[in-house]
Length: 546
Ligand code: C2O
Image 1 (cartoon, rainbow, N blue to C red):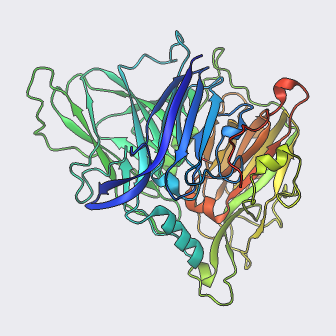
Image 2: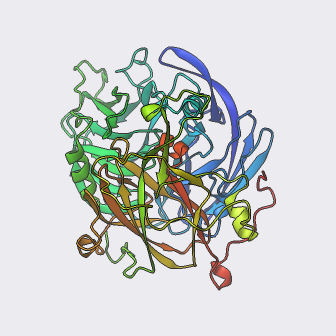
Image 3: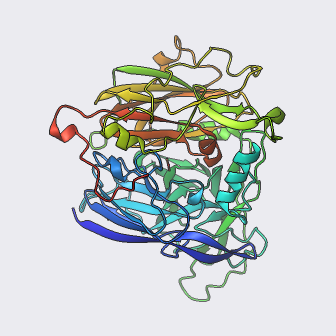
């Protein structure tokens, strides 16, 4: 493959949205950031130079980083932040993967403005397993805050309250015409009648799962998280934060001069606050003969209601691997280590000298198996590589929740979490099964769990409490969907399997940024294997130190 060089200058830039101009952190002054397009097998080399006061790192979401864990990017996990005036070169090979990925800042809430598409095309001469589209278009959903996103989360952590919601959802950085002052800030997709378009949907929103729909059009879902799926048609697509989904849009042959709205708004299972406004774009047919003007009223799509769990569940159940000779589903058939994780919200006590605005006067927190993961003061991967865990992490992450109780019943009196930098150490090539149970202790919310460094197969899911006797026999080991981010249903559970074949330190976390900030995160340390090709190489010399 080729080597592709990029330079990411982290700079401030004034951007106007919703009639307000503010200075935001960007890459190369672009918002959304630059699109990277490469081919399977290529090497990507990105020099990130930090010209702003904020500490930053960049993560390549969904890229496996096989034996290149130093380039993964999450702050405190694989590196310390790139400080003002410093730089770091991310250097990695796109091995065995192709599809829609994205990159984003992985420090504080900077990813609100620092994100972009990362497209990996198949190797030359390798076709898609669906008809070749006429054009490919990234559609990136985001959230716009009139305030400084880092200040929003800092204040929430201080007061213990939920953070202020964003002021708009966006499509490719634009709120769209349903918002005030945003008629001109509307993403337009011009299509030719009769042609097929590949829409690469990326949910870069911080805190919301989104329903996406195009008026009068059905799309064909063909890929999710850069893994091909058995094609199926849908009026509405559900994309959770962190996920990507490719759909084919078949432009109608019979609308030579018409326009339709497409729109996205949250799927919000919890009863917490959410912004229920809608981002919209315009699908515009080009009149092949001439005028091109759009006089017809814009038809709006019918989106499922905000709490339409039935739609969300049905949509997710249709995602199945191709599982054919060319794209087999390599689901681990046997399991070396089983884990049972509760994921959910909890609380911290309010400090004596303070009033807190979280549940019953406490501070909001979040945990896995009741452990709210504390970021270490140095990067986890460095400590692991140097075999110096002392004072950085402990290896006693609980394999089971502290005390079994009915996770879908009434909340226990004590919702307090514990804190620690606890990790799970896995021998190289361990095949792992993780059952994740949503606890619904404080409000029911779907948690889009993201695993770094690996893909996993979703072998089972259900509502209520996981039943270790009766649920495993129903697991799908034939064509389960392969993903890097998946929503654990509110008041339910989900089981994944993966092979720990990538030495390094890998974060697993909820991709809802407020939950991540509250501590809904943990880390796996995957040891080196015996062969030279199974070892993590030494860190690059410019790795940012703490
Ligand atoms: Cu897309 Cu750890 O993140």
